[in-house]
Structure formats: structure tokens, C-alpha cells
Amino acid sequence: MSLTLTALIGSITVFVLAIFLGFELISKVPPTLHTPLMSGANAISGITVVGALILLNNNSWNDGDPGTAAWLAFAALVMATINVVGGFMVTNRMLEMIAGKKKKKGGD
Picture 1 (cartoon, rainbow, N blue to C red):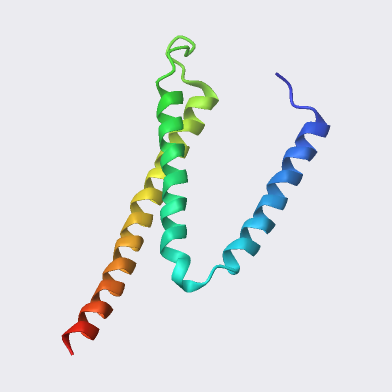
Picture 2 (spheres, one colour):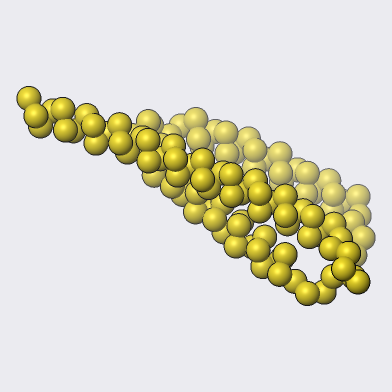
């Protein structure tokens, strides 16, 4: 499968537009919705982890040589795992901060 110049330009255009759209959407989110948004991003990264594991389990490697796709899948697995773990840690900390405020208000 060869990548034509038209397909490459189209892919780069979609990628750049997705960056701008993502930035605009995230900047408009009120602070009260950051925790649910983080949980949604963690779910997407979890899907990436599953996809990378499926690709790494592919048995069609060339005589033990994993090839470029397997290396990219491994990199995606590492980065998505870091994102999931870090995201859940941040989300947990946010929820603890909110729970701490509720306890202080109720105890007064």
C-alpha cells in the first residue's frame, strides 16, 4: 500500500483541524466538567491500550522481525498506559479535593 501525496495532504489537514477543534472545545469547558472530561479521555486511552495489545498479539510477523507496526503499537501501548494511569491519578485527586470540601462544610 503506497501513500499518495493527495492522501498525505488530506491526512495532515484532518490532523491539524482536529488539533484546532480539540483546543477550542477543551478551552470552553467549565472547571466543574474537567473531571468527567478527564474520565472520558481515560476511556479513549484505554481503547488505545486494547488496540495496541491486539496488534502486538498479531502472529503474522516476518520470521521473528516485528516490523514497524509492532514498534508503533508498543509505543502507543506505553504512552496510552502512562496517560491512563496519570489521568486516573489526577481524577482521583480532584475527587478527593471535592470530597474534602463537602466534609468541611458538613462538619461546621
